Length: 179
Image (cartoon, rainbow, N blue to C red; front, side):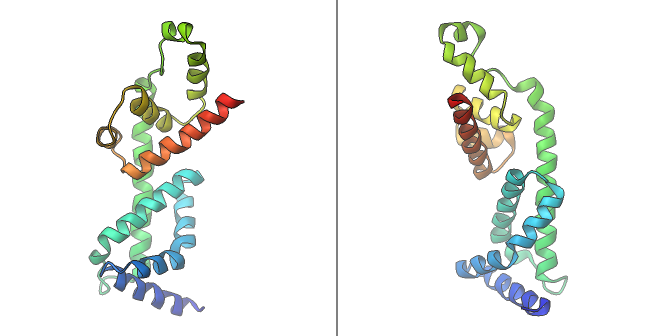
C-alpha cells in the first residue's frame, strides 16, 4: 500500500471513529499501532510503560476523535500529536511518582510483624525488586485496602494503567517468591 493510500485509509477510519464505529476503530488500530508504538518508544524506552502509554493514547483517540478537524491537519498528524502528548504526560507522571515514592513507599510489613511471620521478610525483599509505581500501588491496594477510586486519585493515573501495574507487579513478586 502506498503512503498516500495508507493516509487515506487512516483518514477514513478516523472519520468513522468519530461516529463511534467500533470496527473502524479496530481498523485504525491495525493501520497505526506499529508506527505509533515506535513513536512512543522514542519517548519511553521501557516497553511495558510504552505499551501502557499507547493503550491510554488509543483510549483518548476513541473518546476524543470528534475533536479532530481535517481543515487543521491530517488524521495522522493528529494521532501522532495526541500519542506524543500522552507519552510525555506518562514521563512526567512517572517523574512525579518517583519523587514521592522515595518518601512514601512503606514496607508492607513492619519488622515486628516480619519476625512473627518469616514469609513477610521474603515479601518485603521481593517488593524492593519491583518498580516503585508497582510497589506503591500494590501496597496501597493490598495492605492498606485502598479502593480503585482511591488509587486513581492518589496516583493520578487511569484505572487500566493501575491494574496493569498491579498485575505485572504481582507476577514479578510471584516469580521472586518462587525463586
